[in-house]
Image: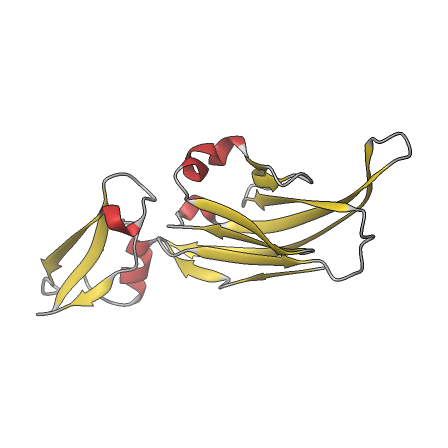
Length: 183
């Protein structure tokens, strides 16, 4: 089993994308379930989302709101291959991501029984935008807005402001301000 991610170090506001691939032959009559979990710096484990063997998506308690407006998406790409995407990352999304895949078989009496479980993980570090601008020597600290800062025309800095965190791009409000001299 392997887990892959789009980057182990991302800027706050960028999306996180993980792939979880189980390499082995499953019995054709079996079903798979997958659970994505985050272990933070204090070793606290929280379930992000679960896709049960029936294909029902169940967000974890801490992620229910974000999931309700599409901030978290899970997909079974093909048998044994799952993806997790977290849009508009925040500093709290930093930690060790784990994918747990369980195989289920029906018993003779028709009940489902777990016959195996595998897991793999990968670390993710998220840099807050204020930290990013200080490290890059821009002089001024950018306000923490949930998007990648960009160079705008006429030496301005820009970012996208959100009416509420983690909304799709069509609801972002662009803003730009002049670059102030250092000192």
